[in-house]
Image (tube, rainbow, N blue to C red; front, side):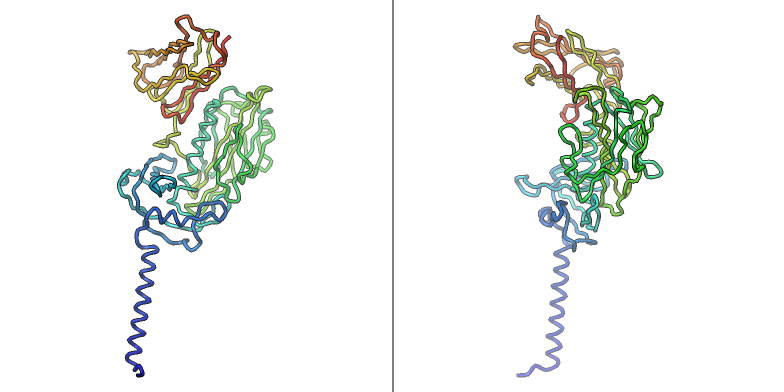
Length: 438
């Protein structure tokens, strides 16, 4: 029986309606409904070793929902950033972190969160790919902590610097404290750029040098810092007092740094200062400065919850043949004695003493003292902490004194002893002294 014109029109209309409904449903399912953390994680690809998204995700956005397993609020030079960590699987074998520029007051661990995640074509260390400004890796939530850890490496070497961006868009590194100034003539400086999407993962080698296998190329170099300027003109060294030493007050200016256009983009650099103040490998210092350039410019953590962020303290060795003494020579950032721990280990790294100062009581008024002791089968040690101001802060002039008692002696045991002073979490080391008994 032939189908009349009216029936054909109805069939066509119904077919169009079904197609529209299916298209709308597909659009809703793909982008408009809230995605789970598992779905977001499943979309990640790594075509060039960079964790990114398929090309058709560009210029789209989705709402992602999940229950944060962790939360940190970082203070950066660009404002507050909240980083939320989500377990993708119950056994925590997979993990993803999302970051938002806010104080994080609307998010809580263990409570469901909803976040808008956008995708865009971007450039990460010279490699084009689709990224999201809200996904921490390999973006802002991943790179900024690297700069903090690299700074900690310098702190252990007795070097403290501040990094800022000038009005002209150049980066300035001010050397605020340098233990053991070095001759400029025996020092050099290199500016390394990350290229081909290189991800700064194992960014420091065994001797503190960046690994050139990770997509690093040398952009500029000063073979001898007394020359003051790099071969390509990107690096300039300012010897503030003209004494031809790398010491406190000097600065390095770095220009020609690329700044990505897109919010999710990043361009990373490593500035390496190599100096020598003696013939042995232990007399060589490798100062590293990890520079992260985003669309806003230089971005770095300057405080907050990030566990490796900690104030800087430099202790000078004033030990004698019978006692270990370290005195605070420089401090910045307001470290507190009750946030520290002190450990003394023998040459076999067996613990002789371990003290957590969080519950230690200091006498009042100033100067105030704290007395600790430990007893082992081979060594008894008294520890005296002197807070000259009596304010609980680690200030210049304060010191730690360790003395053997009850007939025991450092001399009668194997050397060296290793004294370490660090924050209670053990993530930042303020003093690392090898003591050789005479």
